Length: 163
Image (cartoon, rainbow, N blue to C red; front, side, top):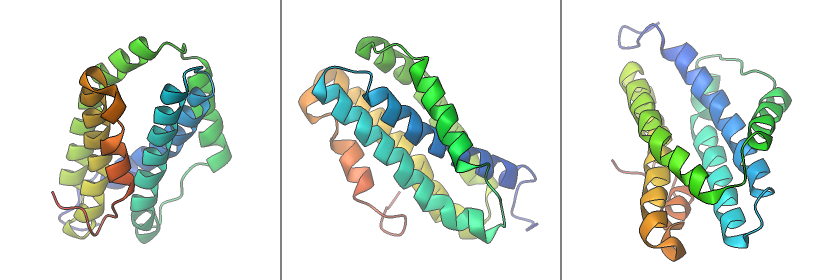
């Protein structure tokens, strides 16, 4: 282990990677529960954001020789969580607005734990929460344009994202 790596880094990296896989399945499954096509489309975009974030850190998982839990089990877990969530758009947004700032703090903490060689991809992972928070803020004021931050994130790659 590198002197620049926090002792909990690898375990946390693996957990957060697995949660992105679960998150993709969660949003994809949840999309099917909503009747409003605009809501379905936004949930599908959120699923794509989760997948894009996971793909960005997949090289780190490989570099560090980490073995994620079975993908089918992660997908089933995300789908089960979605099925336990009511298809209530305002309630979903309220829950996300309350919990996502904490997720961003968690991802920023992971960035700080990681070795310098991993930081660009870790920053990109954190950026997916920034995009989700921007989506939530816009959804409250301009729902027709709220998906733009999600699309922008999907259109970027870890080596092109600045900040």
